[in-house]
Length: 229
Image (tube, rainbow, N blue to C red; front, side, top):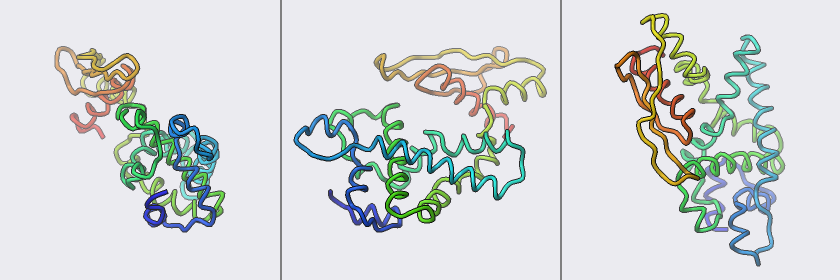
């Protein structure tokens, strides 16, 4: 595997078992394209990493915040969701190390975000097996839990549609509605653009891989436009 040292520098650890790191960086599609290669793809490590991530985040929130369970649950969900993990992989530039098929690498839509999130979980799983709890805990705190202040400040842990409706009813005494402005792309990778309206006025737009996701993005953008965050 190329640039092995570089990714270890990015992750802040030196792996004892290089096979674990190799496995974490191997997408199933790569093995489908290279059937003579004798190694494992990263889905089992992804399964483990998901559990490790949730434990570290839960423990941190429990030990450091006295908030009610419901609020802590919302914060945790915002930290461990796919969008957050994909951003981590993007910011750390991990995708350059992922072995995948040529076809998979060309898919830059929703599948890419899903792929990056899964890769982050697999790396966490590999790090846990190879290094133990404390190093992976540090990685998660530094790269994922560190986002919590912004999540709380911007209220991105809330359901944006519900919050936007609540604020619109409180401030303007009306209920917002959503309209699909456009649909682009093939059926398996559509992008929807949706507008959120108050009366006849379009407040904001949002894009997503489903109408529901686009509505949530539009609502979040609407909160920014109205300075309700």
